[in-house]
Length: 320
Image 1 (cartoon, rainbow, N blue to C red):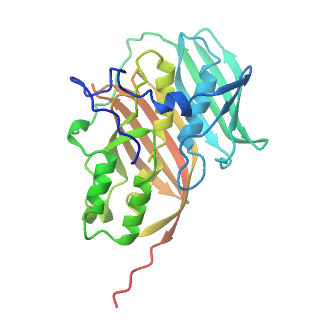
Image 2: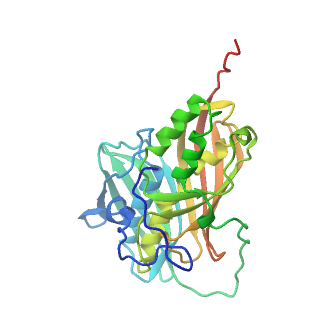
Image 3: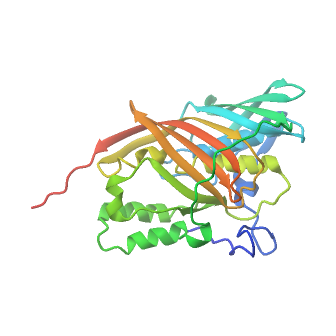
């Protein structure tokens, strides 16, 4: 990716902790900074638009969560969200977010958000917020054992490595150059990246370390959840395509719905491991599950998404 690189991490955990000399994360200052228009009415603008020229789903989810979080008190935090993408977003105009205070209870509160463009809803969203409550009932899966991010190539270096391979076909070279040119406000380091020879026998699973570019800080737990909502949609549905990309050309992919469950506090500007898998695909749809792990092994967030996947057969190259 061609975005300016964040300075290397300091000692210890390898995460950005000191804001001195570091840029404030663009996800906070721009992408997730909504303009209030009236009570429970906000306007959001766009930072990064994918090559599909549709709005990035993670941006809409993150902005909707920002809008919803502004309508609850400081002492309650989101524990789950569920949403549907009902129309393609137009990157040429802002998005209006209308918040409905569906219920405010003593322990749980629910907020509904509708994202509107051109007078029509493009996205519907519900989030549930909870006051922190201790419980003796606790368990979680174990985090996968993987190399730390400091031992892995960043996304740009990995792409450069692929591009230097003389056996890389031109159609893949064009695609990789297009990816490298995108300015995405997150950093990614892929765990066990496939070699060119492995691309034809991949499972619908992938893991990568991910964090927001720049500094967010410890203060606002809600903002870290909003940033995680943005991050969670990046490369998520693509997990379902991994076993099929060598024999099918992607014609169209789009998210249908997206759900998240927040389990433990975390910092989205620190490295987290995103474990993604697709248990099923069929009927021109794919289902993906994801887990965001803190570096200390705590499960911070769980995600699920279903999306439309339409493909065309790859035309075999002539051997003549």
